[in-house]
Length: 384
Image (cartoon, rainbow, N blue to C red):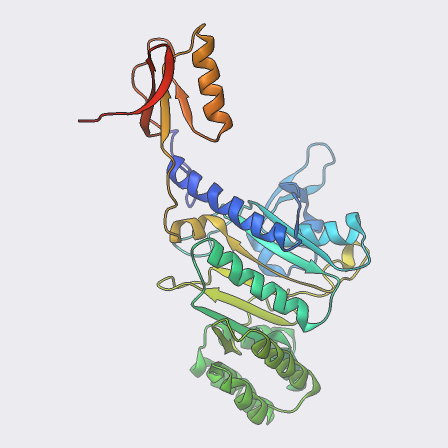
């Protein structure tokens, strides 16, 4: 059965491929008019470069192989963000703000969920060189605009800030192993196990960590957090940033979840996730990851987001399918060849039959070129 594909991989047949390509063009055009420049990193890189600053999660998701030219270990990219950070820090070497976008396949050793593919098409945008909240505002607004452009508008955008948990973990004296354990319990909101794990911690940090899973909802959650969490400088700064984001985007469906700490070992500021009605997982993820370019020679402020275009294409309503025009084989008929060329120049799909071919099984043809009084005209195909 040599036609079978590896598990959690799939072909994109014409209808799905057309949908993916339509959305890719639409969203990349949206990025372009917002000043984001397209980059195309390579599919493989030396492993150290791919995993720089990304944490252990990405290491486990990355396919590895040995380069027969250099003998060094290569990785097939599982995430394009480190590659784009390398381009900004090392190749472009600009001093001011840089806006970059990308869209291409990545490969995962394991699917993110039972319904996920191991070969997502990662579409995203990154903004480098600006530390202020204004950059996060731009990234979140652009993410919302991209989802709306694709026909999958977010009904909820969750905001969080990794600085809150990081400050509590440090103040509570958690070592690396304990910090990871508490983090994992927070992410799945396992409150009973969290109570058990934090039982020996000193107050007020024990109570604060136990409160994090309950701090989710609307803008009132920020007031609750300010009142109930320790007034550590890092927490105060994080809450101020979240308040600025909430005030700056009244048009978006924002909510807050202080136990949403995905990408904790990669992000170091605001994190955000967008959700679509009826779909259990986030359809777009992003956040701030300052310093990602340090391994490439320059530690640059950075914020951005990405989404899986395959997933978005499945959720979005199918776009209009343009029907084609069927044309007989031109042979040496210069007038027919000129008519076909003119139609294609105007953007029409024209399928020219080969000698002996009488039927076109795809794409769907609803019109045909027919000769009338020495002229080639377009007429509807009668399917009765």
